[in-house]
Structure formats: structure tokens, C-alpha cells
Image 1 (cartoon, helix red, strand yellow):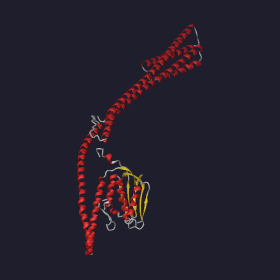
Image 2 (cartoon, helix red, strand yellow):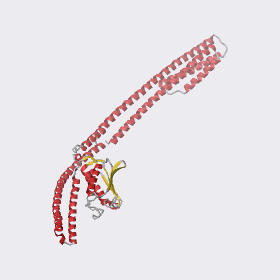
Image 3 (cartoon, one colour):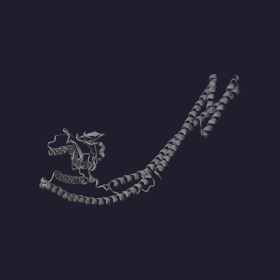
Image 4 (cartoon, one colour):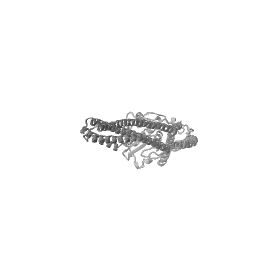
Length: 489
């Protein structure tokens, strides 16, 4: 059964039980109200009967018209009470009917006494007749009072019984609600919380690298479907990571072979390049005076091309090392590193006058060696492209955008056209001619690889002849060596 179906069934059962309890409490409350109304009605009848008895005594003793009028008024009140009875059970209804009959008889006898008194002649027979009528009236009224008291007592008993029913129904309702709540909680714990706990355990096991863990939840509800899908996912992931590990092993072997091949090729290429450069230099030194200007220029071009080829090989090997280097995350002081690089550049070209503005205390979390390579390339570019500016300025600093710290290196040098910015970080992509600004076109590609290894975003903004700004966001990244311990790598 689906969880939604179980929830709907439990909600319906709970609602039905609540409605039944509410109806039972309402019925019991109606019984209490009816019993209270019966008691109030009985008290009013008893009070009226007692009043009639008192005015009857007064009339029989004093024969005053005031008592007669009072008896008439009380009787009219009794008639109204008898004419508008409250809902009664069988015994109370019979007793009320008996009271009505006795009241009518008492009133009729009172009228006969009143008529006999109005004749004006009182003899022995008449006196005995009045005494008999008076006795019958008093007996009837006394019996009526007794029955009225009994009716009041019965109403009180009915109130007690109705209140007992209210307490009983409320107690039973609460007990039923407690049972239903306990049953629902037990089912919820068994069918929902239990599978969820196993699912949470499974996610922790999988996150810890235990890909063989399976949920094995036998229910047929949504959680059971989720568990089966989770098990299928872990099986698929195990298969995928098995294939990935095999591919990684093959790739590792291939990378080692490529590394060996690259070093071998670089060594094999360097030898003929050194020969070309050396023999060209020998020709220039030994036979330079015998060669014309075109021949010497050709030899110089051969030497320059071989030397540039050597630098390209060095840059490619450096780029490969950046890609393969293992990250060692630590605190890096970019400000001190920039000052050190600037000192090195200034010593190499002491004739240049460049104003450096380095913000103090720029700290990032990264690999010191790779960060130094990236910063070296960025600052060397800024140094190179400000070489034709009389008042060169290079700035290293930070700014905050959207709550994130951004590091930047800016200069007021040659800059570049942003229309060609997509080519900026590609290997061997140059936006300036080598005669104007020499270089291999690998430096910014190396910077981009370093930033990518750290997970830092890299960007640039420039205007042709107005300088350039390179910026990156140094977000933290966990130690890559710890990441390798996980099967996901």
C-alpha cells in the first residue's frame, strides 16, 4: 500500500472517530440539557403546587376573595406548565400526566367549595360536605406535591446519569484516540521512519565509499520504490566506477608513456636545435667576414628560430608539469610573492622605471608552487606589455564583489582588443606580433591551467592601448590528496 493511501486511510479513520466522538458527546450533552430542563420544569410545577396548597389553606380558613383570586392565577400558571411540557421519558411523562389530572381535580373541588360557600346557608350537612371537600382537596394537593418532588428527584437522577454518560463517552473517545494515535505512530515509525533511517545510513555509507551497501527495503510503497531505485543506482555506480578505475589505470599508464615520450622527444629535439644554433654561431664567428649581409641575416634567423623552438619546448614541458602536479593546499602570501617577483624582474632590467602598487596582506589558500607560476606569468606579462610606456604602473590588489574577494593584476600597457578575448588563454595564441612583444603564447595558458586546478575562476578586461586587468576568485579547495582516497576521486 502506498504511503499516500495509508495516510489517507489513517486520516479518514481519525476523522471518522473524531466525528463519532463529537456526535456521542453532542448526544450526551443533549441528554444533560433535557434532564436540566426537566428538573427546571419540575421545580416550577412543584413551586406552583405548593403555592396552590398555601392559598387553598388560606381560603379554607378565612374564605377571602384574595385567596380565591390567587388560586385562580396559580392554576392558570399550572395549566401553562402542563400545556407546554419538556421532553420526558416514559415514567416522567406518566407522572406529569397524573399531576395534571390531580391538579384539575383539585381545582374542580376548589370550585365546588367556593360554590358551596357562596350559598350563604351553613347547616350540619353543608358543613360536613365542605369538610369532606376540603379534605379531598388537601389530600390531592399533598399527593401532587409528593409526586412533584419525585419528579424533581427523577430529573436529578437523569442529570447524574447524563453527566456520567458524557464522562464515559469522553473517556472512551480519548482512549480510542490514544489507541489510534499510538497505532498510527507505530505504523509511521515502521513504514516511514525506519526506511528513511536506512536510507540515511545508506547515503552515509555510499558517501564513505561503501558502494556495496544495499537498502533491501521490502515494502511496496514510495519508500520501497526509492530504496530499489537507490540500490539500482549504487549497482550502476559500482559498475561505472569499476570501468572508471580500469580507465584510470589505463590512462595512468598512458600518461606515464606520454611523459616519457615527451621527455624523449624534447631531448631528441633539443640536440638538433643545439646543433643548428651552434653551427650557425660557428659559421658567423669563423666565416662571418666572408658572408654577405643576407647570409649573415639568414644565419641569425636560423639561430633565433632554433632558440625560440627551445623556449617553446621548455614552455610545453612546464605546462605539462602544471597539469600533472599534485596540489598541496596551504596559506600563500600573494603580496610577498609579488614583491619578490618584482625584485627579480627589476634586477633583470635595471634601466626600466616601473611603479609597483602592491596591496599588503593578500592571503589565499592554494598550492604555493603553482600559484607562484601563475603570478610569475601574469606579472611578467604586465612587465612586458608596459615596456613601451614611459610611466608604467603595475598594480596588485583585491576588491569585493557580491561578498567575494577578487584578486587582480592590472597595468597601463598595450592592452588588447576584447573582440579576441576568447583566444587569450589558448596555447600559442598571441594577440601581439612577436617583433613588438616577444613570447611563446603559452604563459596565459599555464595561468589558466593553474586556476583550473585550484577551482578558481579567471577573467580579463582590457582596452587596446589602455592596459589590461587580469582577475581571479581564490575560493578554497580541499586537499586533492584526500579527495583521491574516495572512489569518486
